[in-house]
Image 1 (cartoon, helix red, strand yellow):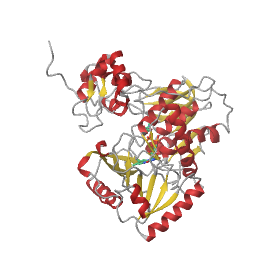
Image 2 (cartoon, protein in one colour):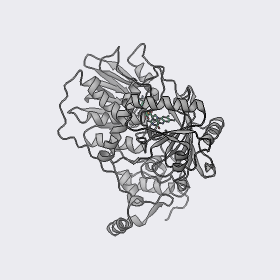
Image 3 (cartoon, protein in one colour):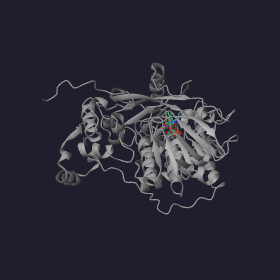
Image 4 (tube, helix red, strand yellow):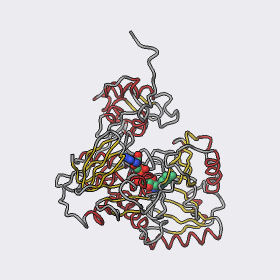
Length: 482
Ligand SMILES: Cc1cc2nc3c(=O)[nH]c(=O)nc-3n(C[C@H](O)[C@H](O)[C@H](O)COP(=O)(O)OP(=O)(O)OC[C@H]3O[C@@H](n4cnc5c(N)ncnc54)[C@H](O)[C@@H]3O)c2cc1C
């Protein structure tokens, strides 16, 4: 099969570019080496839709951050992604930090952030009583929002697929050959896909993909880890705003971030490492996060931590986002070095790739059938009491509670298994439905989920995977009814 476009990588950036492409009359394929969309940086991050106060003025990061932030309002309407309009407080505690805060206020103005203002100590503490009492001044950034990065990626990919995108998961691109007509993209499954354009959205691996077509790529990935604590959603309301410390040369610092489902994220740190895939937590990293966060707020409920995780930023030697057609291979487009604010910028990156790179070379016709809308599954735990009663009358399986912590029912899980990007692994269901994301972290519901996946997909329970190939959980059944 020959495509107009092949996108390598189904993180938030690949999925956003794919959705933008499907607005035109083109053929496209997105290839992802993992078993699902959104498994790397796009899954493990702070989930903040930043305002745009931080990137260096004039950089691509600054431009696409501010544009991306505004586009999230549209995504909420079109593909039903969750948005928590929290706003953010950047906190200064010393005279030096107050000076940095003033500079960042000026930078916010220069970058085109629509709203920002300085708050004195009293006003800040009135709005956020758990702020550390050493606060001197706060930069209030009301356009900062929090989303669920997983849902943004899934929704973008599903909408693109529903509009004609082909998607191959669990398929790794292992080689690319330049041809007179474009490229031959080879995979570990033995497939060879032809296309006129290739879009390299491989995140932490984008420099490796670049080396498949270039002798001397313009950027190299320098992976940077960030570790987090997740605090149980029963502590919702501990803070209402995203809390940033005043940034230093090492980055944005350790944040306190309320999440759309009520949890609190504490993190990240920022440490360079060689391996873009190493997501182990470290004692030193978590101790640092804990100590730094206590400078921002007091009484952080660390006794309510339900898990920890690590994300790896695809920082690069280029410093700014590297979004450009290859200098060595025409029609090969790099989206390299997309570290923070890549989640925020993703929808704007999609537009930029189309408008500033592809449309400068091609006349693409509009896809008249493009449907920008994607409906999310209205789960039992989101329903009003009246809706719950009606749902149960319509389908009594709503009475079968699969996950007690998050109130996920059988039809919720079954719907997720049967979507355009199916959730056919235990982790896939956790990400989609929240079964396993609550206080018991899957202790109660995992086996229920395994049985439902087996029933719906025709697999044996022993064949159902946790996530990756060969990550099966069950070896056999011990109590089989005869
Ligand atoms: C700790 C941390 C905190 C962050 N916080 C924020 C934040 O609050 N706000 C914000 O705006 N941004 C934040 N970011 C940045 C944001 O998460 C990233 O910029 C964004 O997720 C990058 O998306 P991506 O699609 O480029 O990369 P990824 O999500 O890594 O996706 C790349 C995909 O390519 C696939 N792939 C790689 N090689 C191949 C191959 N050979 N064949 C097929 N597929 C391949 C991978 O499996 C992966 O799924 C944070 C990042 C981290 C790590």
